[in-house]
Image 1 (cartoon, rainbow, N blue to C red):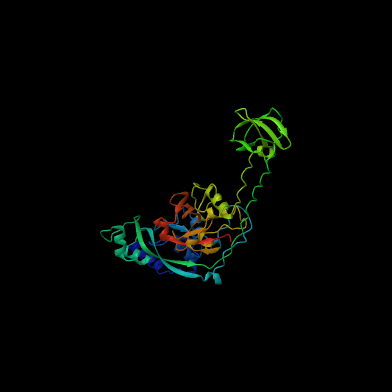
Image 2 (image 1 turned 90 degrees about the horizontal axis):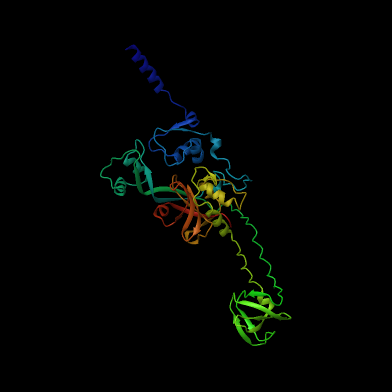
Length: 386
């Protein structure tokens, strides 16, 4: 009985202790509470979602559970070092608190999925996302307010605050020089008695000059035999044993078509399509595995070595805003997914399609902007190259 009383006194003393706010902010670990998100935890401790996920080896930032113990990296690690190809990082997002950071704020309604955590209630989820309990029940065909941990709920019209930054710095793409056009094909020197095939339809004349009337038109690949020559004209025998004259220049092989001039959009799209099917790896930025922002970095750094390895949020602060009707191949398209704002990015291909590293597909895939999932989450587009 005495031991029980002593224990109760010790516990009461410990319960009366209060951790100072400064100590709480510098804590090295955090226990996830019901309803918390990785984005909210990162914001509380002044670190980035990327740094927090990397410190705890979290592959999908949208999936954390109540009671999970997270290690909080130091605040100086909030901006992860560049990953992938080394190079100068001249392109940087505006510093927090600058005038550029005071961008327009839009409140949007998007349809999203939410995984129920321990302690979650339908009322709490509805209040968190600015919807009603009736809307949640109707969207998920629930007969009551009972929900269970791990259950996936469709949240229609979730309230999301999106910060739209003003135009930011652009990058200059350095394209490889176009291939040189081949020289004009040489006119072959033929001797009497040689045989050849017509490289193209040829006009056979009655004499060695252009003013002579046409005797016949030899189709391409017609076998010809040289029986004489006069100046720039060859006398040839046709398969029906008739002879006529053809100008020597017309016997040259056809010139190959000129090389098409490669545009910046063509180069970016061609580079992006090379990674189709590459596996998704959170924080990756190489052909062995990459995430959405690592994919953008890998594609564009092939033409802009000074571009830094940034987050999708930071790429949204670069370049020039582009309206949906003016999208062109090579533009970046952004969506709000696991966190409010531009938390996902892809590269526009044209025809309302874009290529991106998808965490749900676990690889680089091509999707449509018209898919309901992306229609509801579309944030905007940016053009990195002027």
